[in-house]
Image 1 (cartoon, helix red, strand yellow):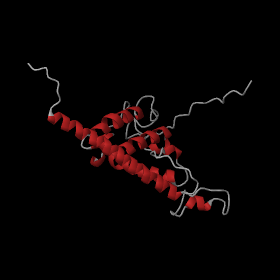
Image 2 (cartoon, rainbow, N blue to C red):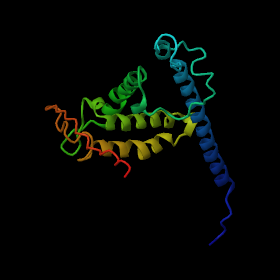
Image 3 (cartoon, rainbow, N blue to C red):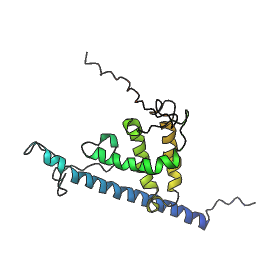
Image 4 (cartoon, helix red, strand yellow):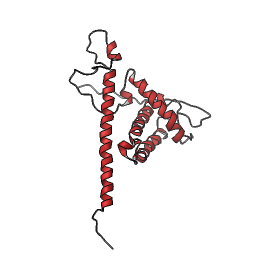
Length: 201
């Protein structure tokens, strides 16, 4: 019985392919984030307090927008709850298409007392945030150029399953909502209070 732990050529080739997929994933994500920042910068011209009261800042003309301030925008995916103006409804509409056309019919077919759902999910900010994060991950991990052939498996394991489990948990955002498709119900749970920091003594 051999105890030789020297890697085989096939094993090294497989490891190399895995590393290539990871590097390609990082490169693709960087390119995607750069394009997204440029798109957002083109949509919003910084309001310097002069001129038309900021209408130009809200409209944007797509040329030179967001430039000239010497300040780089962070290259990160958008967090949907931080978007404002026309950005939020546009991002929410794109997310809604994914939820309606893919997520619900494929993964959320059963609604019961232990698997709640809300047909008005967009009225639950915690659900919007989690669904949006899962959607962003789905966009990246279903692109074979980014993550090879293992991306969908990673998405199911690391993103979809935890997200669905949280949304449908007894203490999740849909806890007061639909338990039977024949009896629609919608309850937005109250937000717990947060006290202000005490003043200096």
